Length: 258
Ligand SMILES: [Zn+2]
Image (tube, rainbow, N blue to C red):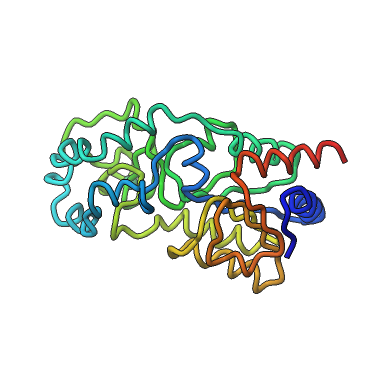
């Protein structure tokens, strides 16, 4: 394992450059660098406001109309998060990932974040495991639409495409299965991947936890970008013990100068 930030940046850049198919697995740590509050940890929203309703999706399935009516009430509880999300902009880490994609050094981003910041940064190839807060989704056919401009004329809203599914926010709720299309894409990407960047994630939550394991077991390289040690650290060939903004910017600069 390579440590020491300068040496680690160089080692990471070399590994990325010599890899065939690089995928970034991104977690809450990257969004935190944009001021988006995390859920867990001492300053986490759940720590401050209590654990979320684990039966959220179950309640939606039981009574979607009621769930939609409750949506406004629940929104006030997470007003802090909503406000932070509204004002969040991509940070240097997001921009570095976009640069890596443009340079042909990064093939795909699998993100656990719902904040749309990768898109705002200009990244193209993105799979969102937990959905996107700016989109709506049909729970039956998985078609998605921007929240803005989606007309709701009945509760619960019906899918304008398949006309039988119910539409909800794209963000995956507690107890809700990961949308099949997103999960399949993640599995597909992990199969092709021979170098995975683990950015701001401890990847302890299924299904994200499985992807680095799969890459590792098929002979791929794991590179961790995280200010803190994680359960994955011991599996990684290279560890960048720094915020993503600093570490990934360093990697981009190294690759540009080579
Ligand atoms: Zn539908």
